Amino acid sequence: MKIDGRHFRTIWINDEGELSVINQLSLPHVFEIVTLRDIDDVCHAISDMVIRGAGLIGATAGYGMWIAAKQAPTNSLESFDAYMKAQALRLKETRPTASNLAWAINRQLKRLESGGTIFEKIALAKAEAESIANDDAEFCRLIGKHGLKLFENLFASNPGKTINVLTHCNAGWLAFVDYGSALSPIFAAHDAGFPVHVWVDETRPRNQGASLTAWELASHGVPHSLVVDNAGGHLMQHGMVDIVLTGADRITRNGDAANKIGTYLKALAANDNQVPFYIAFPSSTIDFSLDNGLTQIPIEERSADEVRKVVGKLSDGSIATVQICPDQTKARNWGFDVTPARLITGLLCERGICSATESGILELFPEKN
Image 1 (cartoon, rainbow, N blue to C red):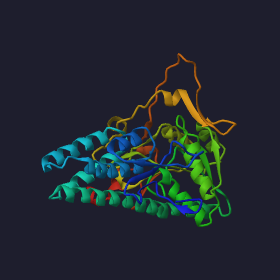
Image 2 (cartoon, rainbow, N blue to C red; image 1 turned 135 degrees about the vertical axis):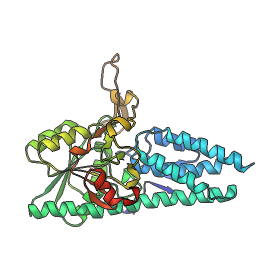
Image 3 (cartoon, rainbow, N blue to C red; image 1 turned 90 degrees about the horizontal axis):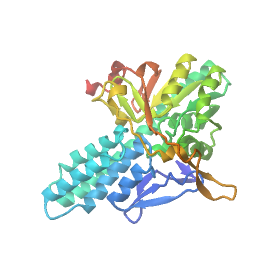
Image 4 (cartoon, rainbow, N blue to C red; image 1 turned 30 degrees about the vertical axis):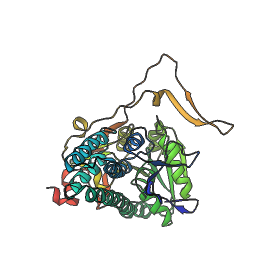
């Protein structure tokens, strides 16, 4: 996407041959690019959310395997391979919920098997990392293309009426390599001239909606309004939401979806008010080995400080972290919840739109039968 007229991806190899990413911890107040020079930097960037979002986590892990390959011992193939497997495991442990992470790492490990020498393996790791990133961007572009049909249908049923979308967390281009998942159809609809307005959930505790989704929409010129997380039900009750569109961090083969904590509540409200509820994601988010999201998807629990403290800009322009609860108050911080397939109107990926059922998913992915 473009920032001040210049196209950026969220992650790329810079002119010095090093890995650059956009520091999402500094947004929306400061646009900052940081360099990840070793595998420690990559693991830190993923676990501490310098980068975040299912697709970008996978792409960063893919590049992380290339960086690890450049650091690996070169005295023998055996020691190189052992090092790579150890770093693969380390990367997998940084964020457990998003399936894109393990998908990218396993793709790299398989690719490395075809290398006959250490130098071939390093070159293969770089090529595969670039391929993973390019695939993510292209998948998200196609999500926008297929998702545009949803907006065409909504507008056709109410010509001239603004299409009000409710989203949750950030599933824009910052969460992927480019375009995004849930925001990709919104950008496409806006660019096609449809009147679109987005209700942006603040998305506690890290406020990715307020800091990232709102920033993306503002940068692209899409009309939007920031609302508190619990406003969604009220908006739906009063006919102010035409469609709910979110991303996902893992989809099971039966259509259950793990996404940012609070998504399940939006799905319940949408179901009660007959508002269509769609989830958008690239196919790397599907975990075909699982068939029950509630019992099988691992839910990450993060630091309590994310709940107890908030980061913001003070009146003098400085950035500060402040505590919002009593000193003695503890907190729990589950990062995700699972929305059962029965509450999901449809699933949207690079191959099209399908029902949130195993049969619907397999229609798009017959090779997984």
